[in-house]
Image (cartoon, rainbow over all chains, first blue to last red):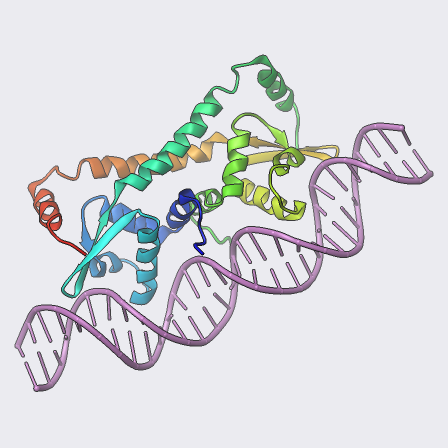
Length: 114
Length: 114
DNA sequence: CATATACTTAGCCGCATGGATAAGTATCAA
DNA sequence: TTGATACTTATCCATGCGGCTAAGTATATG
């Protein structure tokens, strides 16, 4: 049983960590071996490898091993899926005044306080 | 001590759950009371309220109480911050062939296998 | 062949998360 | 003023997460 049924779950979970976002930010500039990726992070290697696994399971990166060295690469497809979700929400939000009912309830709400 | 020092941490964490994304998707269409938001989700109210708190702490939504009813609204600012991060990564990725070194190491890598 | 390198596997730990129930509070409706 | 409604607070529980160490494996390098 996978924990994340929906792809966006694992995707956003993977991005909800500064170490993992830093790895992605490094890999969009080009591929790198695990050792190089791990260097800036003050953390034991097995701990760091878990982050790599999370990113790989989410589909944000791929990796292959040659000899002793595992090289990681960024995979742009999944990021696009996330961006798509954002754009959909933004589009609906932008069209929220398309009918008068919405406009009225919104204006009403804006006169309230907590 | 907050768990998430960086705003993107709490933001992506908040979005890494289908219940919470569904709430956001509902709220981009307009404000709604907690009871209405909770209705589609087969979950006890206190459990659901935790999701609302997570979204509010992340800054994705706001809420105010009038009488017995707490009304929730979408807040677009934080979503924009996330979108900005995505765009930055996409921009760097798009410019990865700007120098020959990157191109060569990439072409080299594409002939490998796992 | 011996040693260093680059992971990999296994197991442990404390805290956070996502769910639950039970009981409390405040407001509105009859 | 009684009762229903809409949360709220408190507490509990199982699981997951992010870190650790210790030990193992496989591949260069001297």
